[in-house]
Length: 323
Image 1 (cartoon, one colour):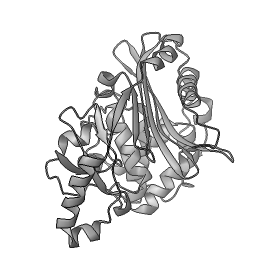
Image 2: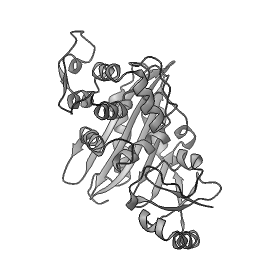
Image 3: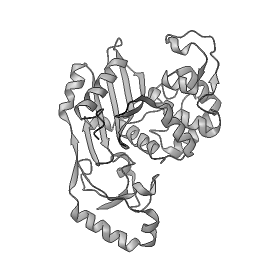
Image 4: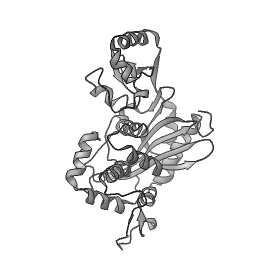
C-alpha cells in the first residue's frame, strides 16, 4: 500500500490517521514525498523521494508511476528498536522511552515502542505550544515582552523576578506561562488545541490543564509536533514559529545546535520527565523525544534527563559535526 505522507509527521500516529493517500498534511512542498508502508508499518518504513507538490498536481499520472517505482525499488528502513539503550534508563533508575528520527537519512530508532504510544501530561513541554498561541494571538508581543513578577516567592529563584518571554522559556517559568494562558483564554486555547490536534486536546482550568493530567500527549505525538515546528508545518505564522525555534536554542557550537524544551510533572505517585527537540549538524536535523518516570519524589530529574539524552546522542555519533 502506498500512502502520501511526510517524515515531517510522526510515522506512528499520523500514518494511522491518514485516510486520503494523496491529501497533503502540514508540510513544505520540498519535503513532500511518497512513503510505502507495509501492513506492519510500525516496523517497516520505506525511503522516500522529495516530490514537488505543484508538479504532482500537474502530472498526477506520472506521480503514481513513480510511486510504483519507489515501492518496488526502495529497500525498507526498519524502525529499529534499540534495546541497548535500556542501559541508560537502568543506570539512572528510571523507566521510559527514547525516540530518534534522522530526517536526512530517514532512519528511526526507538527504545520502548509501547510506551512511545502512551499519553502523559506534557508538563512544561507545553510551553512550546503556549508560546506559539501567545505569539499568534498577539498576547505575547515578542520574545522580549516582560511580565512583572507578582511578588509571590516560589521555590525556583529564577522565577522570582520580572521575566521576558525568552527568559521565562529558558527558566521554564510556570507562573509566566500561566499568565499567558489566562490572557489567551480558554475558548481560544481550545480552538488552537483542536486545530493542531495536540494530544487529547482536553482543558480543565486554563492555567493548569497541561500540569494536572487533563491534557495528555504521547512521545510519538510530541515528536511529530516538533518536526512540524522545524519545517514551518504548523498552522501558525512563520514568524511565530521562527521565534519559538529561536528561544528553544539551548546549546550552539561550531559543530552542532541543540534545541529542546524540558518538562517535569506528577501523575499519581509518579514523577514524569520529558525532553523534546532536535539536534542539528550541517543543516541536517535529527528529532528526539525522551520520556521518563520514577516513583522517587527526590529524583534529580534535571541531571538524569540530560544524562540520558546526551548519553544516547553521543553514542549515536552526534555533537561531532559529522552528521
